[in-house]
Image 1 (tube, one colour):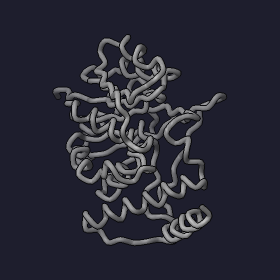
Image 2 (tube, one colour; image 1 turned 90 degrees about the horizontal axis):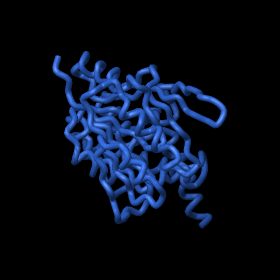
Image 3 (cartoon, helix red, strand yellow; image 1 turned 180 degrees about the horizontal axis):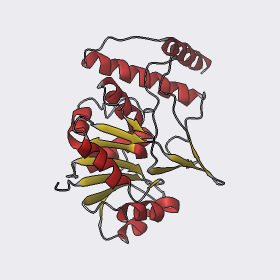
Image 4 (cartoon, one colour; image 1 turned 90 degrees about the vertical axis):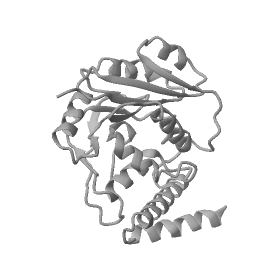
Length: 263
């Protein structure tokens, strides 16, 4: 079987601490037919110099940040990079994470063995200062109605599925809602939400990263949760799926109103 091109889309902003290891893990992938596209979102550190040392990388420089939030900046970066990609398989990665050497080979094989699969997440190893640890998600969640999912760097999609998702991405709305939530909700509603237990991704919890403003049960966390529900209900309406509002949705509404009232 002729190998198909895999596109790895990396978003970067001031990740010089992790960048060399991250990009090296992509360059050294066992899968040979690949393109690596890095979208640098106006970094002010040494990121550009580090990236340019890798000759096989396609670098897109954004010199003017215009979006009002980190999640919207990330979404804009991924869409711009995707528009310059050519691969049949789209791998997403944050520049502070890294891949195991056989990730692309292994994930592509799963797609090739089952033409019906459109979306895959692998189960990441989370890194801390002392060790690596694995979190296994409970897929049945009786309190809320969306799926539990892993971060952006574990996501791979067929190109056609990503294109179909872009019709529903809402690129300028929901400033607290990252792209991993949007893609996973879409895949879930399309019955394409597939998580494999094997680990091919190492995830770094950068204290300055995109999730740093969303401490669990903090005000921004509740805002993001409300936006996730709003986005999901909007998708369900467009996809003509019956909307069911569970108890968690009403709790989210009440807490957001209380937070607004306190201000």
